[in-house]
Amino acid sequence: MNTPKLVTPTLSPQLVWLFAAITLAATIGSNYVIPHVIHHPITPKALGGIYCAIFAIGAAAATALTTARGRYVFLAFAVGSAGLAAFFYIVLAKAFGSGLGGALGTFFGAFFALGTLFASIAGTILGRKLRGEQVSWSVSMG
Image (spheres, helix red, strand yellow):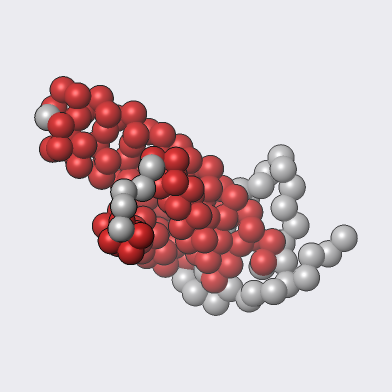
């Protein structure tokens, strides 16, 4: 069964790094913008959902709009997920000191990085579907 082609990729494959950087910046920026909009702090569970949505949308857009293969998109967004983990480690280590802050930063950084990594995979698969490619579960990133 052929999947209809909804998007024709025309951008260079190297632009996935720009998509990943913009996605990481939007994710980090949401930490500062959303609490000011809703006027109270956000729970870590809600933050995780917001981060996953941003990463899934970014990976889908990068896959659908560039000619990059799925593995290349995944690599770029895995680096972005690592950047998010580093951000949380640094922020929490500064806020609570190197002992407790380092432990909290490591925990939350790994938690959010793993979630955004899985969201990136889902976004990459969606982007490949939008390009009209057949996606099999055995080689879904190819």
